[in-house]
Image (cartoon, rainbow over all chains, first blue to last red):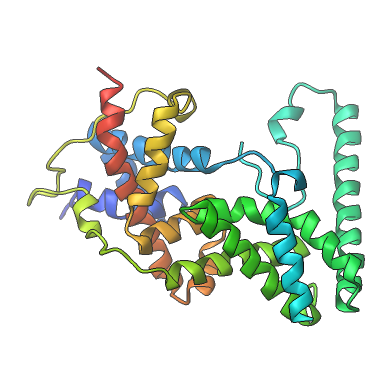
Length: 86
Length: 233
């Protein structure tokens, strides 16, 4: 019987986003799991890929603003532009 | 946790874990009631805006201006551009409020308008020549293995981001991404648009969004990798 060829790191990384969002077909998912059980490099890659997303979210997260945090000249300019457009 | 501005703020689920069932239930009811009241207040505001009530416009600007400025600051690279984009967004709102049918929440509609205003400004800005994204993607040998095996990043993002230098590095690395990929990463991972919403906003296919997002994330990972490995030493 011909055995199924194992997927490579190239394929794992190419389809990583689908794997993470659980969009891979069952059979492909199993191949992924099999590869990850023996490939430290891909396991490290996936962990750092996920960490990258989290870091991007955390660093772009800024505190909630209050109206007093909005420059008054910006508020005035917006309201003036409404007056002009009405 | 990042609290995004477009939806009524819901408490983080984990904050309930240690609370009694009764308290949990009453707090959840209060949250739902607040969200319903907010929606009802918005409906009333929309009706007043559509009838041309000048006070309603001021209320809208004062109520939602801070949220939109926060979105624009995430999207644009300079404060001046962010402020201009917010002004553009409100001008668009003033022009189209009469046709707003409340098929989405007012906050969601404003968020989308603000994102569109940012994208319009970014498109009109003179673009610097972009680096080829391929430069930042992993390289593979003929047998499919990575040329440079990946190494673990031992510390979590929360721990590492305590340092200001690293926060600056992450932000500047996002800004270094080729614009096509930076925008998709911002829309999907930061503004939390769905693949379909991002595709519609950018006028590209959902598949193109998926490809650009994956490449953008990979490129950002590559830019951060040497610095994160340094942490290991």
